[in-house]
Structures are given as structure tokens and as C-alpha cells.
Length: 330
Image (cartoon, rainbow, N blue to C red; front, side, top):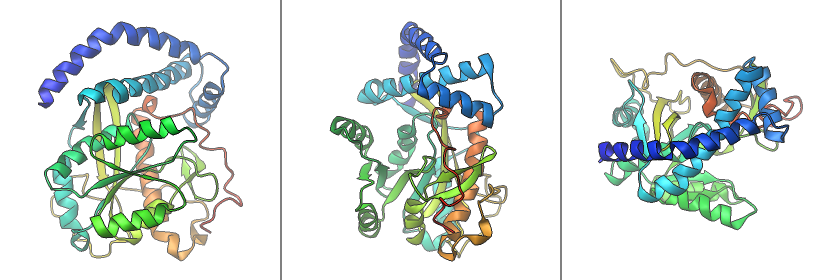
């Protein structure tokens, strides 16, 4: 079935190429326009990657084109269940699932919290996860979604995430009570985007050379319930086709850890390293585990973004908040 889908997608992309080309020209034009997203992206690329001139415009145009591809994937390919999520070379999702259950036996009957960034099409990360869920080898998966002021956008987001089989929990005031309910009653798992900028508070971590705020409350909730943390990232090869990579998290909250002999790299945490935390020694005791986990994730995801910088949302003011007086974890 996957080979059949792959052939169909290759043919569709071939026939859609003239449309893609016209849309890319529009994206390239926007990369030279003095609009707010372009200004933000140019500044971010200059400061974070040292990228200027034509090279920066080219990368920004690819970022915009990625949004166009997201539209095709969400509202065209997904209708016919054509989207495919392949494994990156050297990674095997089924082995990861089996390995983390052996590595953390005390949490074998708990769910998993997948933390990820806005790389490529994040909804497509769930495709292999939902395949295992339908086989009975994974717990029910929920995506956290921030509600929009526009009701039709909420309906579209809900449709796109519910269609593959995920549940949706809106990040309202009752978020934590709903999360606790599904964790206890359904042994729920979560897909959680953690690279957005919280409006207030958050954890400040050095990201591409400068401190940026990261939300931690949802992850803290999951860690307090002893869910296993897994990092996830993917990049788009063609519209409708992404390659997925995952890594077992550091999981400092899970104390009974068993070292697996000859474990593949994505199950071993020895190679993981921390990103720099703002005022690390002043972080509150109850926040230390989640702060440590996020620092390892941020360093890992920065390396993933550097491999495929055109796949991340540079047109976003990620570094606009000053850590002095803004962090609530110290």
C-alpha cells in the first residue's frame, strides 16, 4: 500500500509541478517584499545563521513554499489518505517503541509524550504512531491545539488532526484537568509542539546562540504522570512525503532506567547534550526535571533544524522576549 501511495504521490507532484513553480515565483517575490514576516525572517537568519542577501531570500522563499505544500497536504492529499511518513535512514519506529518499554519498565503501562518543533508538516508525524495504535500497540494519542478566534480555523485544525485518529485537547483554562483525565482513564499519549513562544513566563534556553522562551507546563504535567518523553523531527522530501527521526528523551523523572546492551543510537541518551539554561542554578527544585529535559531537546532540535533550515518557521519572533524578569521558573 505504501509503495502504491508513493507512486501516486510522485505522479501527482509531477503533474502539479507547473502550479508549484508559479507558486514558488510568488513566494520568491514575497521574500523581497517589506512585509512583516519577511522582515522577521531576514533578521532571524542574519542573527542566527549569519545568512544574508540572495541566500537569505532563497531560504525565506522555501519557508513560504513549505506553507503552500502544507495546504496541499492538509486539504488535498489527506482527503485521499495519500500522505506518507517514512523513517530516516538508521531509524526504526517499531524498535523505538519496544526499546523504551524495556528501558523504562515502571512506565510500560503509561503513554508517551512526543515533543516536537514546527518542522515540515507536524500532523504527518502522527502517521506511523497511529498505525501502531490501530494495531493495538500504542495508547490513544492526543494533540494539544491552541484555539483560534475564528471558529472555522478551529474546525479545520480539529478535522485535520482527528481524521488520522488522534484526539484533540484545546489549550484552554481546563487543559490540565482534561489531560489528567485522559492520562488516568485512557493511558493517553500526547503530541506536543514546544518551540512556540509563551506569552509570559516559560523556560529560557540558549537557542541558535541567544536565549529564547519555551513553554514547559504541558510537558511538566506529562512528566509528573511518569509518561516517557520522546523527541521527534521530520523534513519534507516532496509534498505529501516526509522523513521522520525520533530520539528517546533524557527522562530524568524516570528513576528505574535499564541500560540496553547494543541499543541503537535513538534509544541511547549518552550522546545527548544540554543547551544552556538561563540562571540554571536558580531554577526551582520542582522545575529541575522538566528544565533538564527541555535543555536536551532544544540542543537536539537545533541540530535537526540546522540540517534542514528551510523546513522551520523563521518568520516568527522567537527571540523577542528578554529573559531578565520574564522567567517564572526561578
